[in-house]
Figure 1 (cartoon, rainbow, N blue to C red):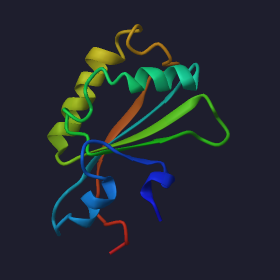
Figure 2: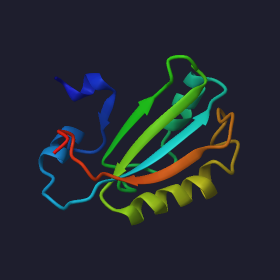
Figure 3: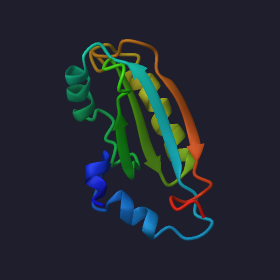
Figure 4: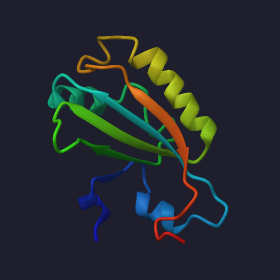
Length: 126
């Protein structure tokens, strides 16, 4: 199945599926998970698309965007990084440079909930 049809988006020159396929045993993947309410999804999508922090430059390997089926004013994101430090640095910059500035985050309706998680089992469950 084509990963582009599953809501995954490759950032940069390598696709997320390729990143998983080339991962060796013991190689960690860190995901910054973000969720928050939005005033208007299209407005949020435009602000997100403007990419004020430069996701690729900041080490984002892949991103996935979700919306709950019963709440069109809520967004859930997964941003994948090769290191925990990259994920933490990006989160710190989101807090200081984006979420604290209404002009940069005009569609934000509620305070973001965040966490950094480490992949401990591959996509096949092995």
